[in-house]
Picture 1 (tube, chains in turn red, yellow):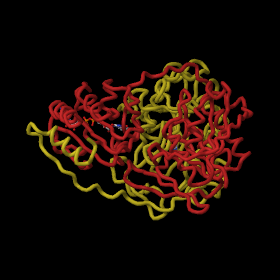
Picture 2 (cartoon, protein in one colour):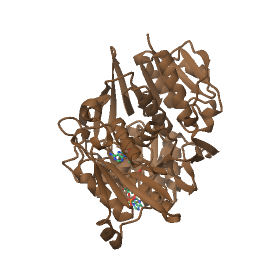
Picture 3 (cartoon, chains in turn cyan, blue):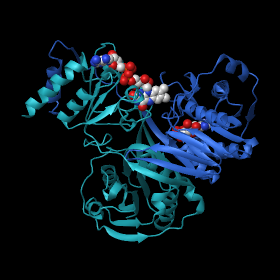
Picture 4 (tube, helix red, strand yellow):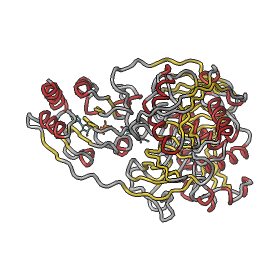
Length: 315
Length: 260
Ligand SMILES: Cc1cc2nc3c(=O)[nH]c(=O)nc-3n(C[C@H](O)[C@H](O)[C@H](O)COP(=O)(O)OP(=O)(O)OC[C@H]3O[C@@H](n4cnc5c(N)ncnc54)[C@H](O)[C@@H]3O)c2cc1C
Ligand SMILES: Nc1ncnc2c1ncn2[C@@H]1O[C@H](COP(=O)(O)O)[C@@H](O)[C@H]1O
């Protein structure tokens, strides 16, 4: 069986859930080989089906933007002729995969939400136009290079050999043009990661700047907190929590929009959520066109009651 | 003297009903278009950069006849001149082909210092054209900038990532992609609108760029769309008005769906 190269994301050595999802998808196509820059918990990779684990350990990969990683991955593609290359759909994952595709003259598909393999044919699904259409695509040249969105599949455990092979690559001077001069870690919120969470509770301009009720309701459900651009632009919530076209795309089991009108750019980031609930005091807010359940009312009254009710039910 | 080329895209209006044509490409004829709102931020940052010293802003677009509107809007905002690459053979080009056309056009411009791009186009955009153009031109790219400082031939950007805020530095000719976090883009003034009428716009064809029609367009893409379908309309949900029990009703619904 041919190898499928999977680019692993592991901040501080901890393999992310989307990376484990990629390993699961890779097994549909061939034998997963994990590609790791820096440190990663190799045990977890083997438990999720990685037969081989290629590791690259050099400061060049963390000191510069995507250039060196793209060159190293391209050299590895040349060496092992994989059936496909998979990366996550983070900005970095997309930039690396697009560059690898160009360097290897292979077709590239970005932001796939599903990847199916039928014999030798790989078909991807993407969601376009604010989630209003789904598109099935195939690569017509080279080994497909695909970036896959988080939550596309549930990661499945499967024993792999997990044979570690330390690699080196020749990095050109040109790849070192954009240097990272400082990096400040953000404080963790203690809540689930927005794009990975099963439940997202968001607040918009209707919060009036106070996210207390939204956060309390989110915590009662064990949910991540999101925000509309209006809330972010007003400085009420950090940009990394913005949901929508220029923020995160989320596709949780449950999305609760509070004081959010439902503009097309916001919808673009949440429309594919399985169940959608909204609280808004305007019964004509467009968000109500999307909901499975809606409450016309003031979030300042509705959310605290809902929070108490959840706590009561959970005992 | 800093010369900045800003790549801008003409896109179908996001608030209109966007759809596909019979050949599975984005329908660009059926809906009104405009300069991608996200590219306005790139134009704004380019204008601020040259205003701080002295310099020139050139806007570059690849697109159909109507794409001239996108160039015009950027000129009204204050850009100095425009380049519009158009050719029937471009129809259906993907990000890879588009990046090749842009790279060739940029090479033809030649004497630029910096290349600014939007973070992503508001239609099917994936935000990879900037990195692909950089790759083709062999230039470094500092992408997804939340803040840009140009100091001589050094460009510093701040990038707000998920886990960290990074400071990134590049020197020499380079590609910068600009997010909507960089600050509001200006509206064209009356004076700007009048002045734009006299600003030069060059029209280039693929032949002008030394590109063969056979290397771009729908039939030459490395990927193909097999099929597309509209997402099934959501079935109308239940809407209740809060009469002091809205929160309880909401949780009742969540419990019925096993979320609680
Ligand atoms: C290029 C571009 C990209 C964009 N990207 C994004 C993006 O990524 N994400 C995003 O969200 N937006 C984005 N936008 C902005 C988007 O168009 C909207 O302006 C934004 O989503 C509005 O946020 P909002 O719903 O919180 O505010 P509003 O539209 O002002 O809605 C506030 C809502 O709160 C309700 N409300 C007020 N008070 C209460 C109360 N006490 N209780 C209950 N309800 C109340 C009101 O009835 C109203 O419906 C983008 C726009 C552009 C042009
Ligand atoms: N046809 C085009 N003409 C000019 N610039 C473009 C074109 N397509 C994309 N771009 C530039 O590349 C950026 C990212 O686009 P995309 O990769 O399509 O999301 C845009 O914001 C523009 O700056």
